[in-house]
Amino acid sequence: MKMIARAAVAGGLALTLAACSSDQPAAHPPTGTPPGGSVPSPAASGVPALAATEVRPLAGTGAEPFDRARRLQAPPGWTVTVWARVPKARLLAWTPDRRLLVSRPRFGDIVELVPGPDGAAPAQRTLVGGLHQPHGLAFAGDTLYVAESDQVDAFTYRAGAVSGKRVVVDGLPDARSPELRGAYSHALKSVAVGEEGELYVSIGSTGNISAQDRDADPERAAILRAAAGGSGKPTVFARGVRNGTGLAVDPNGGVWTAVNNRDNIGYPLDGDYDGDGGSDRGKVMQGYVNDHPFEPLARLEQGRDLGWPYCNPDPDLKPGEKESPLSYTRRPFVRDVQTNADGSKLDCSALPPVEQGMGAHSAPLGLSFATAPGLAGGYGQGALAGVHGSWNRNPPRAPEVSFFAWRDGTLGAQQTLLTGFQDKDGSRWGRPVMAVQGPDGDLYVSDDLAGAVYRVSAP
Image (cartoon, rainbow, N blue to C red; front, side, top):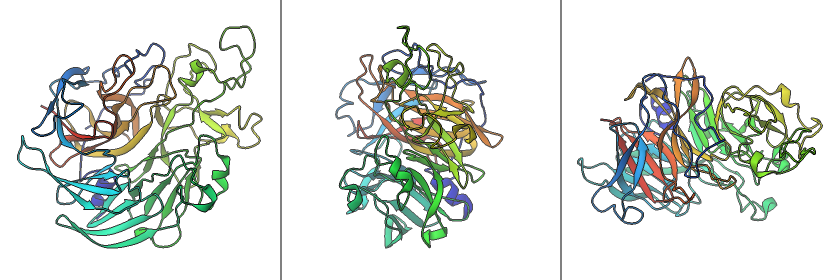
């Protein structure tokens, strides 16, 4: 039961990746990043650099944007196939009987993809419809959990059919909540199942800086925890989590979130960042905004605070310097000069360093863990994050699928696994949302811009 729940939270069955880690700065040095996007990460030990591969549509999947040749950077020898066309595809989960479920908040449904013979696109049908912005998906045995914007539902799943819908967590905030008056920037929810069947639910902030979220009931910008099966009122598990859409459970039962952090941050120090001779404290400058604050990938414990909107994780190894080297591993928090200049709102120095992260405005969405025996090519077991790409950066952060190696109970630095969705002018033809490993060992990646699910196969 525990193994099934854990793997389903990761977006799949007992799915895998084998070991290799790095303590070096993360894979996206923002200084010098080309307009087309990120620089593929330096190869970890035994992992070769990425190579160009043609995206191959299966029969019936070649409509725009695949009506012309598309190429991606992937591990050498790996193939990328347009496996299915699913408009506005978001989060993914494998069923116990090896069908892939795809949530579609835009259409209020969950789509089921049934694999067919190799070389054929999967059969496709609506498994559940009539939902309100369904997003997160997770399994515990034959129970399917679906996170709508205002509640979490549980269904009994058997052989491609669901029954017995019941609401296990309700009263969650969304744009229809009277006190919000239709203003909610991050209404989509994610759900994960812990080792003992407990539920974790992400509650996004209502805006970029909306400190009132920390005092709301239920608290927003938080991860809530409900008892097994959703019994009882959920409690706050972690707070200060601006938009923790990425939510998953690691092989040891730890809960991780990948966070979309805030935009348009002010320069926090009394120094000359732009070189004009005067202090830039509090100024919003594109050069600083480009790389600050970074997007945390954090292991949560009861009561943990990720600081938003008062404290920001800082990637600068030389704090405040324009050309500072950047790192996203075990980084401390600094005061937000616009909301917590004197530190009276929250003591940022008391917050534990962020375990891992990725470049500012990466916009990580789906997060999954794949466990032993491991992904081919020397990668090992680890976490997969769908990086959606930025709007609040110039040049924009490119979409990609990122990998974080799992070793000794924690995650290593970011490595680019799949990239090339963004053209040199910053325009995009695709935006990955989530990557999960399938029961066949291949990776399956949702893309809500291209309206596709890719199958990524190792040789």
